[in-house]
Length: 329
Image 1 (cartoon, helix red, strand yellow):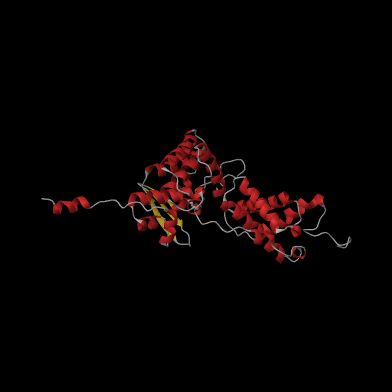
Image 2: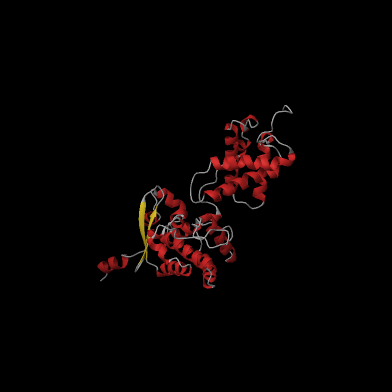
């Protein structure tokens, strides 16, 4: 390169390499992340993961070989990172390279995508330990850990307790619960939720279990936010020093807390989606009916439900006693 030519985004002195990479990675993350309530969390995580690769390998992007990427992925596996997370890391790195190759300036120095070649096969969905259903004992221990925080009187503990009960009692998806607004909830003899389901359809769900409604009211009362139930304000808000008063809680923040509770309860590798798998297991065991479980999960296809319920429970016998009366003397 001509010594008089200005330095570009990916050609720099060693001293400024990290700054230059951060700039390029920031541009990529911004360009490939859509608008959502989790945008800031996603931007931060994407940048952290890709920058960690270049810090690990110590090379300029144009110098990286597929073997370098494979070595990084093997190191992640040795550290106990799950197959699904390793695959996600590889996909993010590949996305960065795909973006870099198309960028008018950066593309001059990045001619190939080493991550695409090195990327492992995608793991089968929902087959890792982190997304399997909790056992009844694990459910009791997890709820006990969060309930203990709630009884200490802190607003965050009360909020997290209400959230966990709602996820477990409904089996709703991550965003379906966390994005609820005050006007989406009606509190009466039972709790009624109106939410936007996967695919964009709006649905309603009743929650009869009184503990769920009581936990929600306890949280809102402690936070002085009972009025939120009749407004478009977010149902769940942040109550930490880092968050602005009234700022909507992101699922990322809640999951960080939940993983701490799970660790206290002796549950390793916890993921929020396990609450949905747990709901599916319990519904299946109670009904013995794959169709009932499918309906409870709002699944369009029965094959998807079978992924959640690895063993269909035996359908309860409600009729053989009555039938036997007809042949008895």
